[in-house]
Image (cartoon, rainbow, N blue to C red; front, top):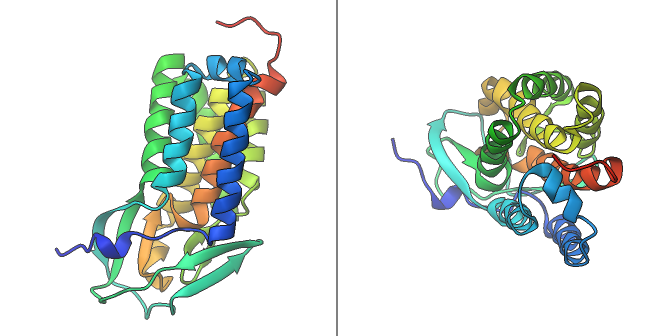
Amino acid sequence: MDVHWGHAQYLPLAWPFLAIFALALALLLIFIQVKILRFAYMRLGISSGWALALLAASLLGSYVNIPIAELGGDAFVEPGEITYFGMRYVVPEMVSEPGMILAINVGGGLIPTLLSLYLIVRRNFLGRALIATAVITVICHMLAEPVRGVGIALPIFVPPIAAALVAAIVSWEELAPLAYVGGSLGVLLGADILNLGLFPALGAPVASIGGAGTFDGIFVTGLLAVLLASLAQRGQPSS
């Protein structure tokens, strides 16, 4: 199997939207420096430095797709940009056409999964995490929409808002980490994994798990999880 590494690397969003995410991350850094979100990171169970590093790695890692396999597929959509729910997604250029490349996105797939597993083990809330993830998975699967040339797309703010509400119901004390875990894994499972069978018909040169139409929702979910802890749990004693 000849999987082309170079062809799988591209920015999942048009540059204005990545610039907005970068600005949000810069503002988050300012908040951290003045210690507004110090308590938030304590509630997540990781230091503020590591939290910022992971968020930055998620943004930068959105460019990196690790090829997994080659799939057959329909004729590819011409390279360019596609608008969905106000977001502009990039359709990458395919230099050669061996078939659709199935890949996992580092920023939107690999890092959120590893961080979610870390939080589950550290906070010891496997049962609650499974419940939150299951609910968000169902919601995302119902709302996920195949978009030719891009992949599976979701309205950007639905996953983080749903994750926050579900996490608050499941466990108020674990609101922030549950929102992150349920939102991140719920999007990956509900939008991408459960729709793998649709990928070959989408005409996208690269089908990226955690990339393109789902990366933005996962990244926003991560930012929201950090904010939730400081805003909703302010004044509670740290465990």
